Image 1 (cartoon, rainbow, N blue to C red):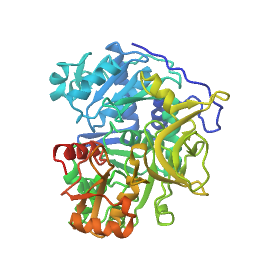
Image 2 (image 1 turned 90 degrees about the vertical axis):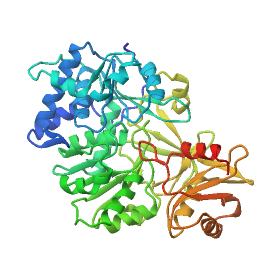
Image 3 (image 1 turned 90 degrees about the horizontal axis):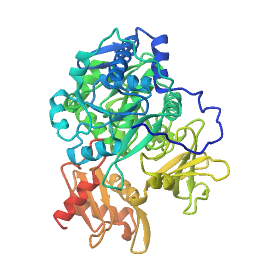
Image 4 (image 1 turned 30 degrees about the horizontal axis):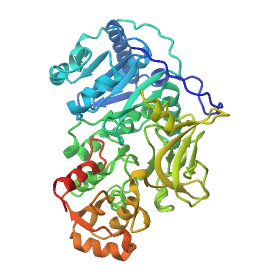
Length: 510
C-alpha cells in the first residue's frame, strides 16, 4: 500500500538542500572514491564502487519481487554490511526502509508488521521460518537473498522526489507500541550533511560502529561515512568482549558510543594491549557520565569526546565541539547549521537564557511526523498558522546559555514534584555520579505509593550513597531508598532500562 504524506510548506533555507535523495549520497561517493573501502564487516568488504553495484543488484531483485515506490520493506538482519546495500537499493526504488533490531521479540514484531504493512521482510536465514509464522508478507533470509542476486540485472529508473519517505524508524516511547518516525529523503540527507560538517569525518577515517544499525545513531554512520569517503567498520552484534581488539584491528579513528560501550572500553583497556588510532568518540542517545568521560580520556589519550543531543524525530539537534565539555561542563553543544533550537514555556513562548523549559527544534532536519498517528503528529509537530513553519516539541527539558549552548535537564517524565519541590531525575543522578565510587545511577520518580528510589553501581553501599547525597542535595531531593546493583539493566540501544527497574520495584516492593 502506497501512502502520501503532506505537511505544511515552510520557508526555504540556504541549507535546505536541492532535492537530494538518500541514494544520491552513494552515487557521489562512488564517483569520487570508487576504489576506497566503503563498508567492512567480519565477512568481507566492499569499495564504494562495489557497494554501488550491490545496491543496484538489490534494487533489481526487489523490483523483481514487486517492490515499488512508497512500499515498506522490513529489514531485521543486525549489524551486517548488507544493511547498507539494502538501504541504498530501496532508496533507488523510492521504497521505504524499515530497520528492526533482531533483539525485538514477537510481541512487538507482530504489531509492527500490522502497523507498517511491509510488502517484504528480510531477516537472518536461521530466523526466517519463525518470522513466517506471523509475518503478513513474504520473508527472505539475507544469505539466500544474496545468493539470488543477479549482478548483471539493471534496476528500473525511478523518479524519487526528495519529499518522499525514505525510512520508517521505530522508536520506543510512552505508549506500549513503538511508534515510527516518518523520515523523508530531504530531511535525512540534510541532517546527514549538517552533522557531517560539524563532526568533520574525513577520507581515511575508519568509523567503527558497535551501535545497532537499527538505531538511527548507528544507521546514520552509513551516511556520514559515505559523505566523507570514509570506511565504515560494522562490528558484529556479539562483539562486546572483543570490542577493543576489533577497534585496534580495524584501525578505527572514530567510535560512536553509548554509555554501556564506553564503560566496556574502559574495562577492556585496563587489560593493556597498546594504543589505538582513535581520534574521536561521539556520544548521543544517553549521555556519558563524568566517570566514563574521565575513564575514556585516561584510556585513550588524544581522543576527543563529542557530546551531542538528538532525538529520532529531528535526528540531531546540537553538537558540541570535541572536548568542549572541559570548558562548558554539561553542554551538549549548539544547533546544527541551518537549524534552530529553542527553549519554550508551557504556552510555547521562548524563554530567556538560563531558564529551564521544553526543548524545541525548527529546520530542515525535522522529520514528517509519526506513521499513521495524526493526533500525535499534530501534538508534537506544530505548524505556524501564518508561515507554515514546523516546530518539533521534543518533550525533553533543558536550558540555553547566552552563547547558544544547550544543557539537557531531562524528559517530561523525568520532571516531578516531591514535598512541594520541583526537581529532575537528571540532577539527582548527576549528584550521585559526583560521589566517589559510584559508576552509574538511575532514579525512579515517585509513583503511586512508591517513593523516590535510586539504583546505582559502584564500590559503595546504598546507605553511604544516601548520606553523600544528603550533603549535595536538598532534603526533598534525597531518595527514600538506594539499591546497589552489579549492573544497571540496559535496552537494546544501550540506555538504562528504567522500565525494567520499575518492574523490579513492582515485583519486589521496597
